[in-house]
Image (cartoon, rainbow, N blue to C red; front, side, top):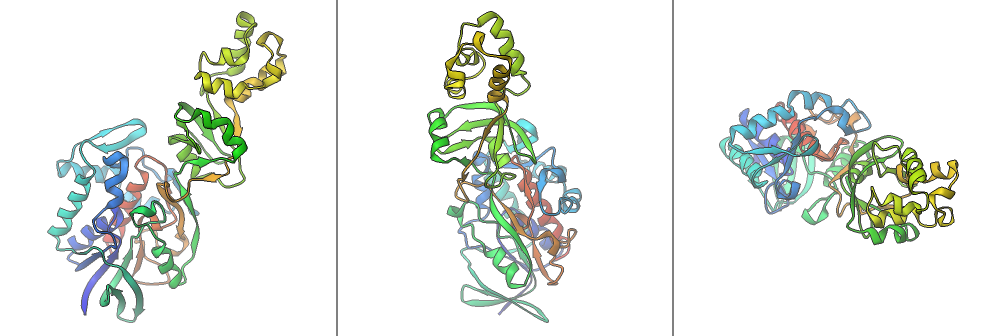
Amino acid sequence: MQEFDVVIIGAGAAGMMCAVEAGARGRRVLLLDHAKSLGEKIRISGGGRCNFTNLDCRAEAFLSQNPKFAISALSRFSQWDFIDRIEAEGIAWHEKTLGQLFCDGSATQIIEMFARGMAAVRVEIGLRSDVGEVRRDKSGFTLRVAGTEVKARSVVIATGGLSIPKIGASGFGYDIARQFELAVEETRAGLVPLTFAPHDLAKIKPLAGLSVDAIVATSDAQFREGLLFTHRGLSGPSVLQISSYWREGRAISVDLMPGQDMYEFFRARKSGQGGQVPATVLSEVLPKRLARMLCQGYCGGKTLANLTEDELRGLADLVSNWAINPAGTEGYRTAEVTCGGVSTNEINARTMEARKVPGLYFIGEVVDVTGWLGGYNFQWAWSSGWAAGQVV
């Protein structure tokens, strides 16, 4: 039977970071994953260039039942610390919009950086290795791996969530938490396109492929970024962001002309272009197809000159406060992250250790901490993996 100080289950961003840190402390580390290669989610992220962190990374950008939980790890290993590491490895990067940082080259540079780091501290890696059982006794943990048993003083669960099952996502981490009687917050797809019922979809499906700048909001949050019409509903960065806050049965509101007083816009046009119908005037500032959809049938097709003040305000509201009720999301198939997870009430925020199960740790996406779109979730993986790596 092989014995290790630490067994880490999950060779993604959080797991590899933890392995490097624990190995650097002289711990004998075994990193396991059922996938055939390291860091699959890193490899496919950011269009193959990995949006590895965000310059504005802060606790307020994360959803959790405990909004303050992420502060400790994020402050002790920040975005600046990760930037220092990749620069030390000679990995060039650039900033896109809203503080999002990407590799100039391939995302595989990040994976190779960790592979070199793990080799340097003699981390043993077992890919294509399914963990069938995890037991705990007075001396630590026993894991059944591919028909054999492995002993460890500590076990770190870094298996991610349910998003993107085609690369092997599973609920293994949640199962382990429940096995040891730890609470798991309700999970749902996050950073995911929204879908619509047939009667709503019929209106917007002809707009598929159209993209505009917009503010998308719920009662809890709002985001101004690109909005994309699809054959199933709405996508684009603003919609992905709001999806993590949206719950079934709630409406979302969309401002299709951010920063523009549309009542004053229409009132001004009424005096000079009163003979035109609203869709014609609106197509000056929005794509024609979208303008026609919004104004279709409004006030019986009256011209601007024939609209009352209340009707003008209602027209402006169609543009600045377009209310629509999503029927659902595209689900884990296309979701970038999983919202919910192992309850933060069960975990020490400084060490990531389960309070009721000494020696058992949870890091990364499996924990009930979900970041915004734009590198925040990778930073949580680096930070939480680093935190656990200091103590396992």
